[in-house]
Length: 172
Image 1: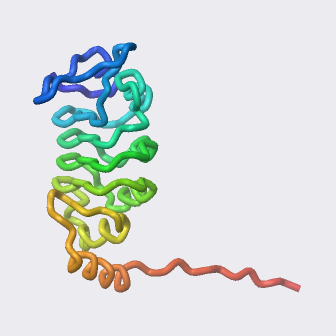
Image 2 (image 1 turned 60 degrees about the vertical axis):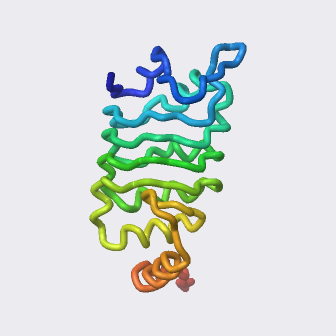
């Protein structure tokens, strides 16, 4: 069954994995991961509320898999999960490379996937992501090397213009 809106998930039983899913006394899941891949989600409206309904400790969410959906942007709601360390967004419809900027506020983000989105075709795709998210250690399922970081820094110096500081002049 494919879901198009996050609220559809509330009534659904999670798939069973290798380990049994533990529940709190209130019946909420005691997990740090949420796998919503292979659906038809095109936005994350009510995502926070749904996560709060499903998980006992939504603030501990460390892994979100939203791969193979119909997302066209990186919803700012994802930046509210400060313990997020793994985020899979590959195989969506995210157009703009600048969407990655939103993720810079996530202090623990270490693994990110974005391949299979239209943004992947933009010049400097890998370098831009690595410059924007310097703490990433795995990007698109491939380890980030020192050489990758050096290349990204050189790319940044050549392609990202520093913001001009406008000085107000006193008019007499």
